[in-house]
Length: 216
Length: 216
DNA sequence: TTTTTTCTGTGAATTTCATCACACCAAATT
DNA sequence: AATTTGGTGTGATGAAATTCACAGAAAAAA
Image 1 (tube, rainbow over the protein chains, first blue to last red):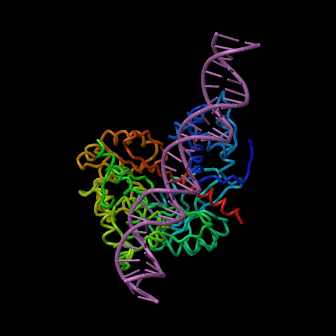
Image 2: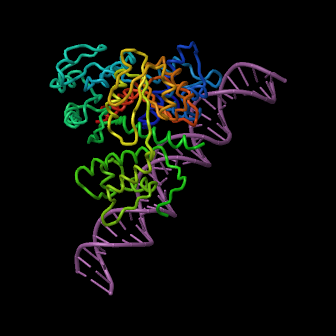
Image 3: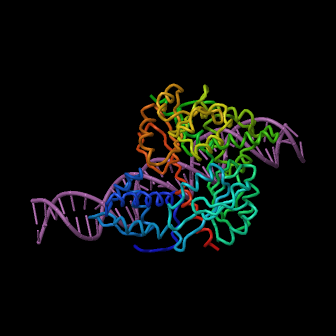
């Protein structure tokens, strides 16, 4: 049942790993390798070979028992599966320390996904261009989201402003939010949200550090 | 089987939620409520009541069928479960945009967990004090990690430096790393690592935005 | 040519995680 | 006093995610 492109519902975890595989493969290709076995990719991703193969079922790119997967082809198949063929634009809300860090991280990293606009309420931060990203006043949020056909937003503003901005984003048709705010946002089912609560992540790390440290 | 404190192995997911519950409860308490039912906490956390109760089994704080859980007591029990009684120190490596954002996020947020030292290789960034955090040159990394008994580190440096720094961290006895670098670090089993790859998170958001947008 | 080797693709088994559903309890109600 | 109500704590159940294990296929070895 190869090359089927049905409405196979793939799990969130699986998508996460496919994105990781692609990244690892791009790096691997740079090292000059043309082929890769599932167990090698598994090692790079810190997973099992069976899981890699299971995940790859979704993209339907066949590997050969002799050579494994052709790296270039697999990257292409993954991109075909993961990316919008036309490309997607994203918006950044909040050009503080975190916002600028995000712009740096994402600059020129992806051919099909770019942060094209950013917003802030601080006049000294707008009307400039950081890493190919146009910076506007927050009042121009909605019109720009709509005119650039933006479906993905990164929230990097103070928690106090998070709710009202998220409402504006929803009204403008945003379909996914990366929330770096500690605020918890009420979001309908048909919008994806990922909360990055840095303090909570640090607490989690501290908890496991303690457990691991006490164990011998 | 109440108030048992065996070596109950609790899942990573569960710990994550317990940390979330505590945060929500602290906020909830500020609104003046003294008691809370599992279904209310579940609503705040966007989970089911059954899961909340199941998670709370690990902390062994009893609720009453009449009033639910006493908020103050539950917060205390959660903190008792999650925190080190003496307190823990964390270190930040890299005082760039992201590093400063992390310092802001974590400043005065937790009584038992503080970022007490930060390191950078840029001389203009060291020998200062940001949000109660001492900033040193990277050469002072190991001695400070050891002398402050630090087991948790936040990596917010360029990817190129990540590997060598992570090796130093491991040698200094670090037990948990929050890795904001896109680099993948080889870490032994007895050290906790959490990778925050912002670009990959954005890709994931974009994938689901696309799926949700095409659906109806 | 036949056998061995090695890896993919995937049903089946297993493990992990989440939900169900109910015994039990105490207040409120009849 | 008996009954109803609503919520906790948890064993039983169900669903989801992962791993096992093997048929199939093609190169390499015999």
